[in-house]
Length: 299
Image (cartoon, rainbow, N blue to C red; front, side, top):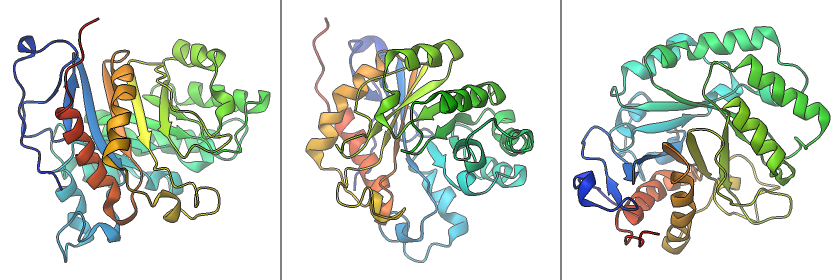
């Protein structure tokens, strides 16, 4: 486990391509690449199997977020996919985290997994639910995650367009699990709408999206799901993401992140290989690898 205590040199003392940690104790796992801020966190924080690997033995669930926020300044919230977010729940999370701490939150499954036009009631409830994050300036992203079965078809393109319009006041990001969406027409339309693209790191299986540095808004987004080939199609929500990145795999991801950063004002990085606390461990290891990365020559 890394306990990162690295502080920045002044920006003018480093070439534009330098990686360095933010010079602030209140923003753990934040770095900069040139002028671009890189914020590293995990997908979720409230897992019982993190007690031991991440949280001290005996830690009650109500302290998970407090302890998480001491190590990271960004988290993805997954519960909102399964149940609509309630304002009081998210206000409590705002109250229990530092002012610099930010949240990405998934769209509810009634918005992304039912097809057709988004239901007005679902849209209304979702806006109401995330209002505390917006009002506090703590909403980094709303994640529209679509399943592999969401193919590049006219009906699905209309569904996506309807969602982008209905939720257009929010900082939207789209993650596709099907490689049919990886082409220029989609990128152009998302850029026109100001909707961000999520670059996923997934097992190298047929039909899954490739790892390519696509940016369609001012913020880049990289989500690392692990590369568990054996369990990807048939595993459950835990075994599918049961994977530890090696040092060499994390180092090989650095050039991809650099390319994303050079097109963005900020990059969000979320580790989703959450089983047994691997996401938190790998997120901190990735930060350490980036901070130690040699400088690239200027072009």
